[in-house]
Amino acid sequence: MQWQEAANQITLRDEDGTLVGEITFPTVNESQHRVVVERTFVNPAYRGQGIAAQLVEHFVAYADQHHYQVKLMCPYAQDQFDRHPEYQHLLVSPTN
Image (cartoon, rainbow, N blue to C red; front, side):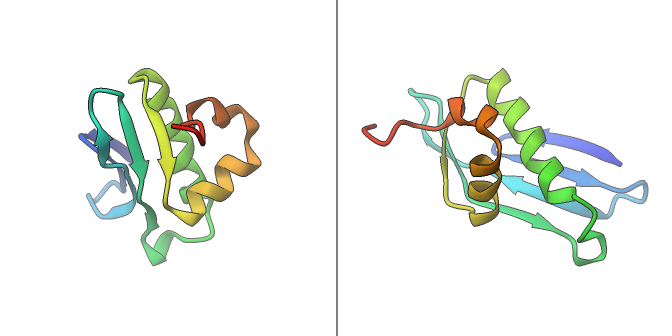
């Protein structure tokens, strides 16, 4: 499996180059380094293997590295952030 990081997207591909999954996070405020996690997608052939959780985990590391402040639109990402208190520091405060 190969991780690919690009502007506003992290993808995971298998050895043949087939898309395994992706997480997208467009910038909503560049000056404040804010992004919104729009969606987490896993190819149906790879579902049930924890790929979506790995995508969110990889995104969290990427967001930390780039000092992003995060808003969540994706229900799956919201669930993962709720389950992992160690991710909370990335979230934009409700007053911002």
